[in-house]
Image 1 (cartoon, helix red, strand yellow):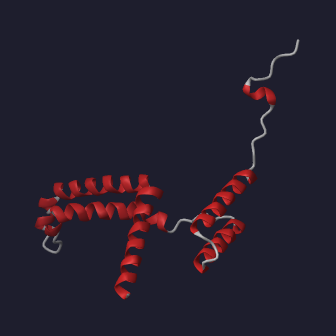
Image 2 (image 1 turned 90 degrees about the vertical axis):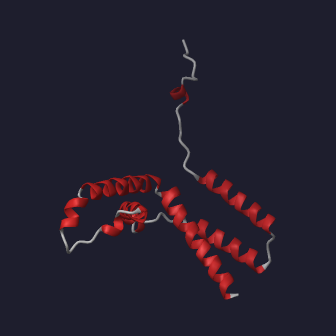
Image 3 (image 1 turned 180 degrees about the vertical axis):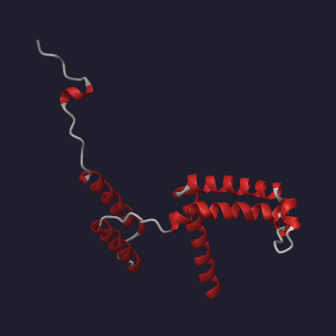
Length: 147
């Protein structure tokens, strides 16, 4: 049972990390990869200089593992600020409805199909309540000139 729960938590964490890197911050992730590659090339250029300095041992970064480490370093540096940025919250009323539907589903009071129908109704209600743009009749060029 404990191993099963660990696998579930680990899979959830990996899923969140992938979402964060590739869905929410694709630009930062791409820039981090580019930075990592450039950083690795700069290290290669100065490799001879670093080898002469005895108290800096960068020999472990020059293999294939070092290439991956440089890319991971770049991705981390570019995504670090996004880890602490403010996350937009849902309207508390919407969040309350979602929590209530999940609770009822967990307790067995709702079937998955009923929960899905409630979510669909919630989405339609939110869309209805969105502020609509009031366009003047003539703004789209549909009003005919009266002469």
